[in-house]
Image (cartoon, rainbow, N blue to C red; front, side, top):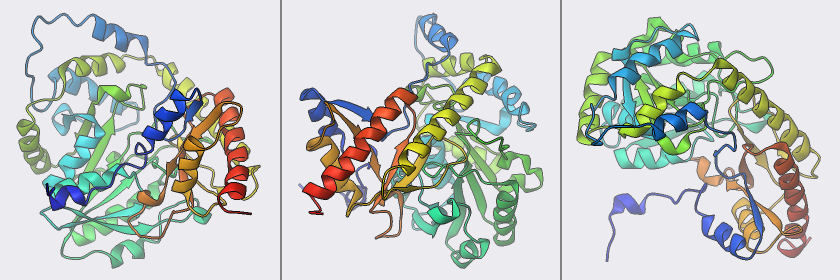
Length: 400
């Protein structure tokens, strides 16, 4: 039977679509190191698990569409630690940061409107855009520039009467770039000039390295009427499966209209909001230690990858991802080969091919996104697998 044109335009996730090969590898007794997905091996704070265990409601009832009031009232104290003035009424709790992005698209844009985005970008944004019938317009950032913000003139060239917003992620998934205060100011000034919005995904704000300070878009009070910030508990507290996020804006019209979408899905999950509230009570040392651990892992894997002949990668400044360019003809074919046809002493690696992290066709087909979410022992084994796998692939598949 014929499926809809809408769903036919969706791509399967490059982060997950090779999962059947990974499952088959496991069935064959091969250990798979998952570098394809941002699922940390760091433990969730214990009080989060305890809050779920102690949930004592006799009915799991519908909650407020905008989220539990006690969670919304607790969040401003978290943002205040970063010198940010956020009120409970500025916050809409969402089912993960993903839903916040979806709400932003549908609130700001009509069908066939446009959102400008630096590429490579978080590939699932493509699905959110297709759902909202929004066209993503790319501005390409480059590895040789550390994936820094392209020249602001490149953004302005792409603004049309259909442009609703510019969307960036900082610290960036998949590149690890952390946008500077000056880069954000350039974007906001451009948005003000053309009367459009700036959406910033700040899910990874804790994870900045080399002493770099994080700059939040929420600090730019003079532009607050055109700012939407997307946030999430998933990565910060290693609770990805809880699916609790937030859409934050001081623009009351944005929140009032996004609330219509929130009401249509009734409410965010209740037990997970209780867990999120408990997460906010986590001692600051937890995040300090987690940041230090990711920086150690970043240093380890970058050093390891740069020792492999033909591999190129920049050094990410934040988040826990990097983009690596491999000496192969096609990164997806290589990723499949690693799972289906290769193992090193019973071990192999799963990575995410990067071609679908770009809107522009023909870019990224030799690149992969690597999530350094495993401990350094596992990363050492994973790098060894990549090194040996590249040699095997280039001999067996590329005929070198």
